[in-house]
Length: 149
Image (cartoon, rainbow, N blue to C red; front, top):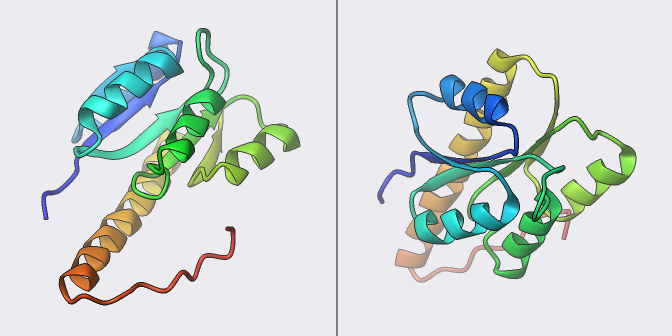
């Protein structure tokens, strides 16, 4: 199984993208300044992506628009999406989690903790993908243990 090592960072502010890119300098980085561009990049690179770091408030297409696209195309279970936003209202948090976001990280944030949280969840997704591959090779079915569907 090929290791996925590419992050898609989606934020309309270049400084935020740069800060997150520097934080994950050990990974390949793809940047997008809005949801529309992010969808194009996601489609081109979906087999390489290990996570999406997604701002909510952006021009052209906001983060929720991209998240809805990922749900509609059944990508949301394959690559963890992290909402990184200053909008931490109950409405936005509920919507993000209801759409399948792996985690919501409030701006401003502590970069060390963000790195740890994101890397931990990427590792869990990698393990889940690997186990799914093994189960499929054996011709078995994976029961759905999720509680949020």
